[in-house]
Image (cartoon, rainbow, N blue to C red; front, side, top):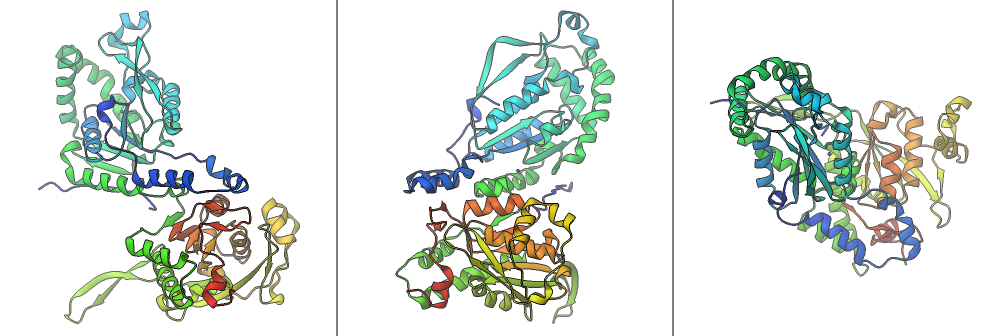
Length: 510
């Protein structure tokens, strides 16, 4: 039985109306409905203007491979299985350049498999319009006369999923950069030649000799020079094309997962939201209820925090480890990351320490105290030890305007493990609001030598403004949260939020 080969590299992103099915993704629809129905003040709407700069993005899939490799079959199978989403198929063949009269007279000497045969600029324009949420007119190419139909186009509407299919869609980096997922269909050369002969003679009115001559003179050399080298850019490689049902099923499952993500997770690949269940929604309902008792608030908050911590630990590196089980068998598993510590932002972050200690026995935990200066979102930092104040050179300060502001305006104290630069750091704070507190804490960790990619920021709820602030400034850092809320209000409080978490958790509220 042939083995299924499926390669995925995620550090882990137009057809006729017949290719449309179902409604928009429920999660995306609910998000837009809740945003429009929830009452917000004018200042709140202004505060979320950053969100408007990031419109909902469709999931773009590139499908490449040699001629007659089965690309269209793979696309059709993906479309059929994504029956509950709107999907459009855009063929690179639609963007062939029309031949001039001189080229038409010598059509047998024209290389249709060369990148110059396509109008890539128009392809980029059309896909860009679709990604921005607008419909577009795609040209129709006449393969018998080798020119575009000047008086007719195909109307392609905006959709949840855009599939871009063609032999050279991976060749141009500008086109590749539009894609969230790149699939290469890998089929034996003899099978591809037989399919091409059948297709060109039946569908395009050509004789066998001309097909074979073109294949030997242009198609095969172009495949070796342009198509095959682009295979290295693929995230997924499907051998045997449409016959590989296992690979296609896995791809569709992955696409469904991506479509179910919050929009901000599509914009920022370093943003992670734990999968929502009725249990998680129920716990959020309880801790957000202002009438809940302190005992219940702490109990259900601890449960949610434990889930976030466990999810965050899953992003740490691991090594393979073998153990002997009580039955004498060998079990191959993984060993936990040894160099690890927690850092809590006092005082709300201290509520997350018990969950971290329960998951990581004997873990070291440092503390950072950030004092909020009024209600304007500005922060002042304080730490626990003055004797560790670092000496900063002028050129280091001037290297970043943001660091200059953060470091010169703040008096820094710290109580952190001495070897923190060698450790992966779990930064703890239940609420990500403006992102200022988190940014100041992250800057301190970076000054202490912690690599940005070693920091995982854990919180219960996040506001879009804070996500934009942290993720754009620190693209290598990871954020793990249990829910993304709507916005900040004019007092820079998360809406709907859960109030002052520290006061509610430690019983110091009124």
